[in-house]
Length: 109
Image (tube, rainbow, N blue to C red; front, side):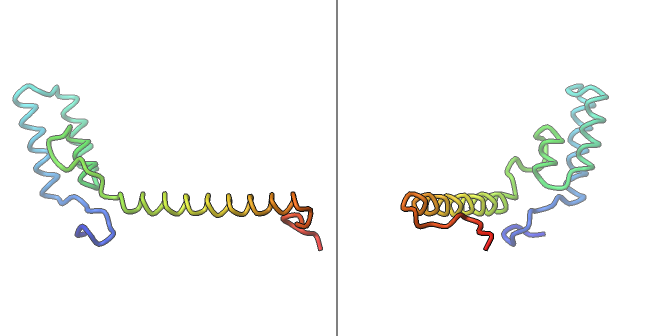
């Protein structure tokens, strides 16, 4: 899926293969032990987003940037709006109680 369409970008098979090849080169060069290389290679094969691939490969492939910031922002704005609406309702209800003219928030009648 392309970026900018509201969907997180996904890794391609070529990107996964490049990450596995980079990890193999690191292992052959002696910079990774066999167990760590095997774990990272398996993590790379399970990676779905470029950030997952970046974390799994130890920064050798993928992208350190999150691709779901739009979803996070929408969630924060929605929750913020909800908190503000509840706050306004509580303030108006409390002011009504101070006047003595407000009914309870839930009336049985």
